[in-house]
Every structure is written in structure tokens, then in C-alpha cells.
Length: 166
Image (cartoon, one colour):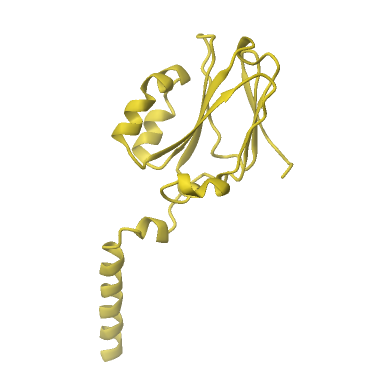
């Protein structure tokens, strides 16, 4: 009986210590759909009507933001992203690209560790916003379910496929 009481006391102390730890979020796993290892971007020769295309890859670490930003159009995202960065520091990690025709950059998150406040795998959602000239369509994609997505940006549309290459 004495051992049981001692064990419960130690468990209680451990919980208190961990609860007060500012790094608790990095120690304990949390739910995430993000399995991304690599993101390959491909711009065709006629991308965005042969003009540079602004593309943001956004790792979202706040559940409330996921609900909000998955509803945003690309146009609205580009208009308001500065406000989100100011309002939610550390809750978003944004990689900005200006894709010119025939460019093919690749983002490998584990090689960009210094840009993430907590491990990138813990982001709840990874969104891609493409700011095309054409205003009628929406170019917003949730790529969280993919492991190695290849996004091809064409004249006026985006396609995403799971890549088998490393």
C-alpha cells in the first residue's frame, strides 16, 4: 500500500513538472494528418499566362486557423497573410516562391528545420495558395494527406499527384 501511494505521488509530481514545461508540445505527440517528406513544384512553360506565379506553402499549427484558412481563396490569402503573420506568430510557417516558367523547386522540410518553431510533422494542415492572374478560379490546395506531392502549375490550373520518386 505504501508503494502504491509513493508511485501515485511520483506520477502526480511528474505530471505537474511536465505541465509546467514550455517544451511540452515538442515532447508529447499530437494528432496531425501531415505526412509530408518532400514537396516538388513544377511550373510549365506557360504558367500563369507566361508570368511569374506567387505560391505560398503554409504549415498551420493552430486548429482554429485550420478551420479558417482552409476556407480561404488564394486571392484572399494573399491579401490578408501579413495580418495572419502578425496576429498568430509561431502558428504559421510560410514558404514563399515566385515560380517562373520551367522552374522546378523542391521543398524538403527536414532540411529547413531552423524555420519551424516546432517539428514540421506536427503541423495540423499544410496548405498551398497560388496567386494566378485569372480571377475566376480558386487555387487553394490542402496537401496534408500527401507524402511526396508534386504540384504542377500550368497556364491556368494546378494539378497535384503523389510522386513515387525520392
